[in-house]
Length: 123
Image 1: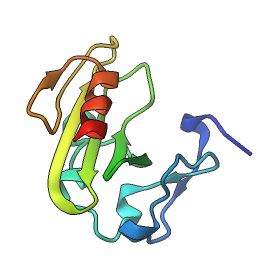
Image 2: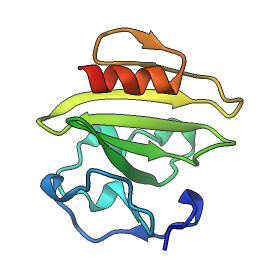
Image 3: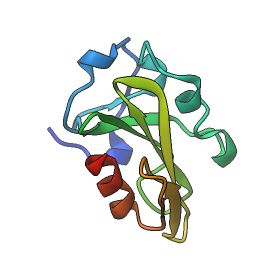
Image 4: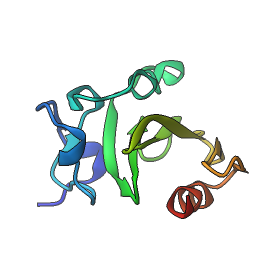
């Protein structure tokens, strides 16, 4: 049964990169701490916004998308990790007022989350 994102329990069962699902999980949140190969950049991605739990969201092409913080209404950070090169990391900061900023793989700075995700898909 699908649950709203903020009501999904965190699953800390160890998981490897190849096992991360291509689409969002609707019954649980896979925690960053559970990802065996998680780079430090991901594990620290929420440090400046109160250290919220970090949840796996989905694959976007070769990118693994994670979110630190709630889906809306508060500061959050989306982090994309290249599944082929775990040192390639891009993030998008979403502010509580709905504005945002992040650099995509093209080097372009985006103010809209949608355009940042498009940059990931097009890289």
